[in-house]
Image (cartoon, rainbow, N blue to C red; front, side):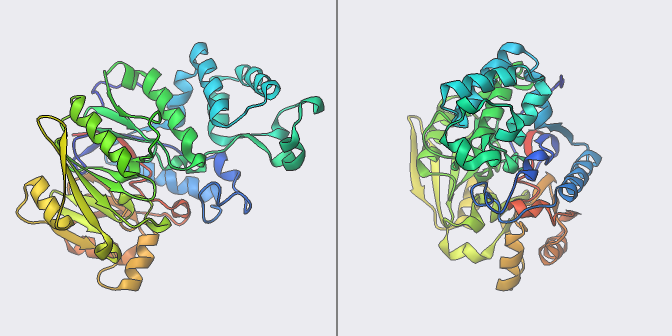
Length: 407
């Protein structure tokens, strides 16, 4: 069992990263086919061995910079060693996967209860197909006959290596996302169980800010913790204004240090699914931004009041950042420079999805050469990693990291 001396807390986007949750891509990616790519939110099929090598190298970079890396699957395995927790988890896992036939449901329950905690965790992430269990013909329904061996009772979670999205630490509490797409909803079930039963959260009195019991979607990639008192939240393809308002209410009323939320409305587009695909913080007053959407942005402030909160529209992003963070100057670094084609190409390959591991020190994909050179010229220390396969899932180093603790 992982022992955590210091309670998880994140009050900054750039301070020294001390501990984070990651997930090593595995069997779930071997389940991708041309037929299910769209449903599982992928544009291409990654080469699994190579994507694991790239991820391992990313972890090595973090560890060399004294970041403690916790693997999501290991955390899940640890809590499932308690039989009552495992039994509850199996029930909810089958429910979230839409197993409705009583006969099949009972059969799968017994099948999974016989498995070890490691095996249940692997199945929850990697999926379970018809041809992997011995089921009597009398129990088969129409779906089994039509889809045959490719039928998933438990669907794989190939997006799980983007651990940023299912949740986010804000101050001393956890926001568990309410995911927009059906393909990603089981990811939050995993995080919810870890939050509820793992000692990292349970013994450290970690607050709760949001979860999937709310009907409106919000995802971790849209949340940036700019300072102790200010966060930015993207209103995007995946995050609704209703969810942002509810999060604001919970943060203001339940004792967080947050006093202001900058709501950044970005275009509803697959290319810009989350705020961190177009905008990230790299230093105290410096930000990386995709200039191709500059004219489409709208920015609002939700400000904590003595009773409730107020909302007003900001002039622009730069002005809002200066005011919220009490900074005299703000430096916005455009990805790809002023070349629209280069900027668009590198944004597609996650040039804006930088992970700050210390002020002015970021991890990025090496393939975004122009953007990386621009940031280095601006005095940012860039640590490049290979991401030819990792980037096929439409996410970068920030997407792959869920910070639990920053200095």
